[in-house]
Image (spheres, rainbow, N blue to C red):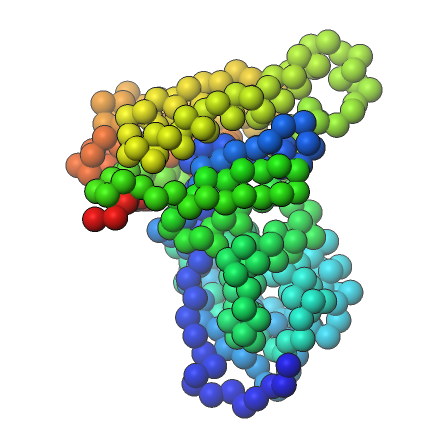
Length: 367
């Protein structure tokens, strides 16, 4: 593609939200083993990445600057004329590996010039199960697509972002890149490598008042994924250990038929605008996840901070349901509140009694 002089019209703003897996976490990658399909219900967050983007006519490089949620800035640049180096950087891991992975996918399939992406504001907590890495991948894919008129659809951006992220040591599934849809709730179906996305049209006037909570604790998603994936891969150890085999069978049962039953019920409740029913499904989901999946990775999934939060006594009269987010563990929690007033009170209790950080999320149908 021919380059042209940079002018004010080359600069544009982008916002990419995070992603909340309301229900169905882990079923995306599990479906890739073809033992069962996967289903999840996701929506974008009100928090995300704000960026200013412009084409560069003087160098074929991806110039990156990022400011995290605490205001700490970092910057780097990636040589777009060296795809081998981009892939190596992606495979090495680290913060910039996600941008490098997407840049690699871009340059091997498109003729592009340089690009500057200034992520000048971030309101999305990192490493809390809200798909901050996927948001960065979608941001880079969308920035190239818009700057160079590559005309990628939302699904095309999601595919680029996914291919970029799995070039890193991350073992994410395909649900994370659903942040490309923005704030629209989406029902996702995974069948091997095939992905089907159904944006859900909520009833007129329907409102779901969520509170997302940063638990201010730590979890290791890599450890969780490695442990759960063992249930889908042959292991001489598990084949000789009946107790371990039972644990792995529980993981497959939950991520397969149990997840399908709960997600199909949640889809119908969402389409009906039935918050109380969704809350009941959230409670059942968390209880079964704890009993059937938790034993596969007790070091991470016992999650004492998560359970302290979602079981906090003064919160119970205010909520329909609560559960973990993302890969689960002590990263983040979600509450579905009974009303707007209840949502406000839940946020106060989380701040003042639990000393955690609440974030508001409102999902609405047409007015």
